[in-house]
Image (cartoon, rainbow, N blue to C red; front, side, top):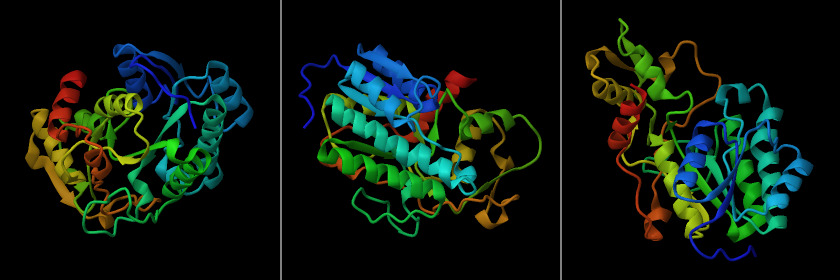
Length: 293
């Protein structure tokens, strides 16, 4: 059993702090008055269990937020060992160090643990069945965390992450919005765009309320990639008629890793816990575009 956290002022350690979510989480926690130790991969390679144990136990934070991951989805298909090292071994090492230091762990996972064949949105209790090596390795990371820490762990599954501090769909489309020619995006993959600045605030909320278990955390609103891109172009003041739908089968070149057709996550555990939902993705998108433009 981890130690009891008293009061809202807490000590956090962030792994993967240089990434999009890690950066927003670090900044959000600092803004909200917490003590934050932010480790980039250069500071801590969590695939090294000895290093993870030494660094986490040395500061014994109240909460560790594990944002570190091997996220190159297509590269995972041909580099299975790196995928599992970054997404399973590292997660197990961080969880073991949290157990030793009596720290809570919030571990970030993905919609790719599902195969996308369900018609309705996926709840936290739906069976997992990843299609890709990336999804397999992230599911293995979830399992490692829950095996190590049991009910004290918090696993957040999120999807279609966008933000100010890393490559993502919004950045890509904004670079293309004033170009000429069609913008072709798939219309047969659906999900919930999620914005790292909003997710970071929910991470803080889950930490301070000591909520544990698996939570699906996304901004509200389910769309296809085609619909999402059309909304980005519209909000950026571009010509929406340039955005054209295509099926996944028409992608050139084809993507090595199969994607789930339905990535829509139902935030059922959040609702059951009485926790607030994230904003509609259109509102979050408008905030991000205002920051990026």
